[in-house]
Image 1 (cartoon, one colour):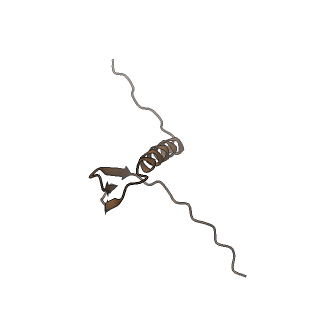
Image 2: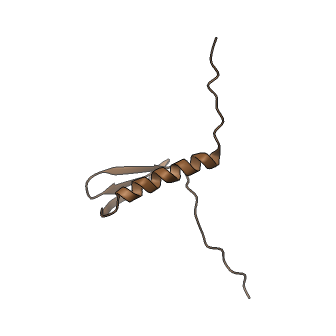
Image 3: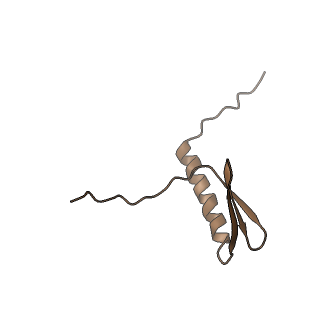
Length: 71
């Protein structure tokens, strides 16, 4: 007998978990200098002055202020 390993993943929950992880990574970058950023096919690679490379995957979304209607 085989076990059904399929599960449903809520996209909002996944996005929130990814956002929390990115915030933690960015917090560790405080005081560092970004020496290189590469936009690769499936990720963004960010290199800092200590030689470490951090990878960011997926689309996190954006927050754009709403434009007020033209008067």
